[in-house]
Length: 508
Image (cartoon, rainbow, N blue to C red; front, side, top):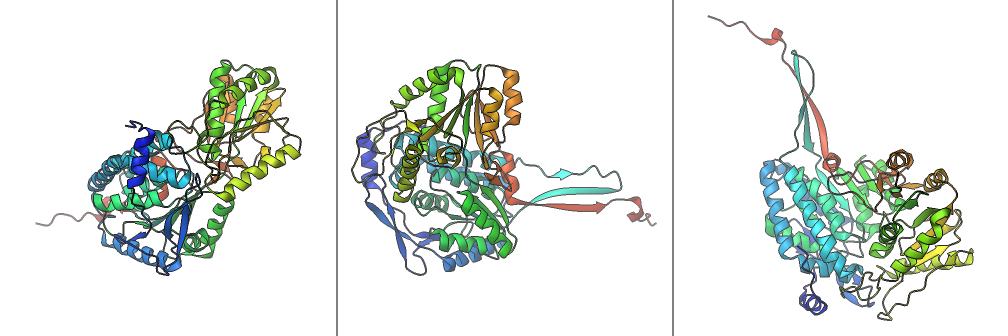
């Protein structure tokens, strides 16, 4: 479906874009009630793309009111699941028709490489919506094994008003991960995009309206975290919050829930994920390919980025040489140039944070093993991949989530030491394990404290497998797979007495 455009074709799409910049509430686009806006910046050039409506608690109140009204009316919540499915399929078809526009919007605002947007993010977003749409009329309720005297029905009902708070690193994909199962289950959905990346979600709102999703059922309310985000967390009439972002902010949503109505909160948070290469690992060229992809894809701005490489000292030197050689092929520059593998860092704040980790690693004695020159707009926020050796386990680059293109390499003397070091983190989202022994793969995969363990590859699984973390990487549920639907439904037991005592004798 990708049919990658060339650079001039991509520029032509960009020049024709109309930037969506106002809130979408109850089927209509409009300014924030306060009239306030905030700029969205192109991180590759430093230029302001447009001003986005800065919604706050008043706008959240209105969206919740309209979402609750739509839910109570049954226009979506009680619609036949097959009809909901067909409307969601119609939305996916509209997104397919507008796929290049969506991809360019995302690349301009986030700095993501257009090649990734066209070939990965947009197709996977559409596939995710289709997958959950198809599940709408295929998830069964249950009957308990209650014997002949009763029928115990276990039914699933939509939770009500669901708020989805999105991150900036995969705006469209994370939107689909949440809105797909939430809409398929019959909820009213309110989306707060990350303030750095609002436009693609607003474009999806336009298409959702065109597809026939009723007023109030799908709404997008852009705004800052401290205003719109906090208003969502503290709202007394929101039933579920699904959040993807930092562990720090995720903890706040748990506090907001306790301080308000005990709304259900599901969190997908940070990670400090390892690539673990055991002593018996073979085909180092292939391992190097996966390790580089795991560390630097999306400029390392990825919750499952394998920013730690833990490798047995026997093969350390050979593998590191291959990693350095392969990293040199990852061209950095203009995100709208499909020849570039890496684009711009999303914001000045994130750019400064990453450079702080790089400078700190050098001061602590870590050795920078590679050097890559970057040609780019001088006003742009570009960082080439950085590979560090001589890293100690107590260094910040070995402990903290950097969310940038920085790899910390740590040699070990045994395979068990590698596993123990991999687990020395507050996080537990993903781990990649490389070994040529299938038994060791099973044994060590079980020992790793992570929600996803990929063996002899870097992977998050696919739409059919649940995604989420251990420890401070996750809480309350899983994205992807049919398990994702569990976040957005209430389970009700209906107990029907069917004993013979309730049967009257026939009269006459």
